[in-house]
Amino acid sequence: MTVVLQASLQHQPAADMCGSGFLQPASCIHVRTPFSSHTMSQDAFVDFQNVWLAYNDELLAQNHFAVEDINLQVRQGEFIAIVGPSGCGKSTFMKLTTGLKMPSRGRILIDGQPVTGPLKISGMAFQAPSLLPWRTTLDNVLLPLEIVEPYRSSFKQKKAEYVERARKLLHTVGLGGYEDKFPWQLSGGMQQRASICRALIHEPKMLLLDEPFGALDAFTREELWCTLRDLWTAQKFNVILVTHDLRESVFLADTVYVMSKSPGRFVVKREIDLPRPRDLEITYTPEFTNIVHELRGHIGAMRKTGAAINQ
Ligand code: ADP
Ligand code: MG
Image (cartoon, rainbow, N blue to C red):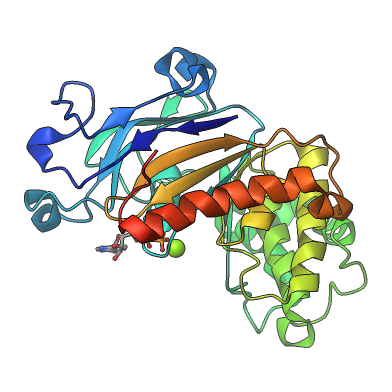
């Protein structure tokens, strides 16, 4: 099911902001599914309520928001993907989700708790694997446990247990036997596998991936889709995946959200009703390509108007 969340958007001055308590201009139409209404909020694991962010006071005074009026409810264990043009606010959304940035307006709840600062229940991986070159693969994966409480204080006592956990995880993603290699001895795909292990070593409830496979060749990328699918199937943590790759979003996610640029808003919600488990063969089926095509249409329409899509 596709839902257009915002239609025919023009940038609105602050006095016109479309949120609760603000004026509702005719050009800002909210069409929400039962899933995205606030009636679901109690059950949502990630709950964004009318969230706006300006990066600093000066930008706020100019009503210059990086993201605007985000309303989003994500179920426990749901895999969502966010697609949209460069600069539309995808990474900003991630920073808000992990508490690295506080909203200028609105409220964010994760796992029922208001976000007031950096979250410990999440793991993150980015496009660049950013492994420390002087540490082995195993030691890179162990790093979060060495530096983040509550693991840090018990790291020495529990090291054997943690090493065992890291080895198991590396084995799961196909890096068994590479524990003692240094990052520069690994391929790009292997480094990214290791960085996903590092993001998961503290068994987070939520995994945030910001274009994690963007720098990899197509074959390696598809292999890593399957790795991620298997990890998620086994552990059912929440995933928020930011990607430019529509096939990737449709293959992996339960729900794909399309963001618009200027203003940075969530404009389309597409539930991916393809059966699971999904394997790569599904990407060659008409059902799959129809969804990719449909999403491409939304992005194309946005690029044409230079703003959000027209319904
Ligand atoms: P995306 O990840 O979709 O490419 P970002 O979330 O990085 O987009 O950026 C969204 C908007 O916020 C852009 O206009 C960008 O220039 C702006 N922005 C990002 N980071 C900052 C910052 N630290 N200070 C000011 N503006 C920022
Ligand atoms: Mg980004």
